[in-house]
Amino acid sequence: MTLHISELYGKKVISNTGHWVGEVGEVILDVERGEVSHLLLGKVSAKSGDMMKELIKNSVEYNKVRKVSETIVVSASK
Image: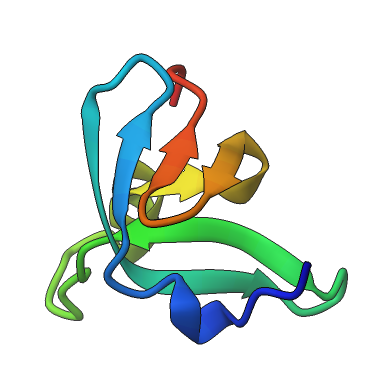
């Protein structure tokens, strides 16, 4: 199955236990590996003091994704 990165933007993210996690605002790529690394939930302000800390706090590792359909289902542990 082929999935375009643009299809992920705006999708709602829930845990496999049914809890709201967030909504995809950005997709972070690992260019060296040629794969999606993280889903960023919402937008991170460029004015943020520690950008890396904000990225980690507001993202889900893509390897936690269990299903992509109308919503994205991720493993409960973040």
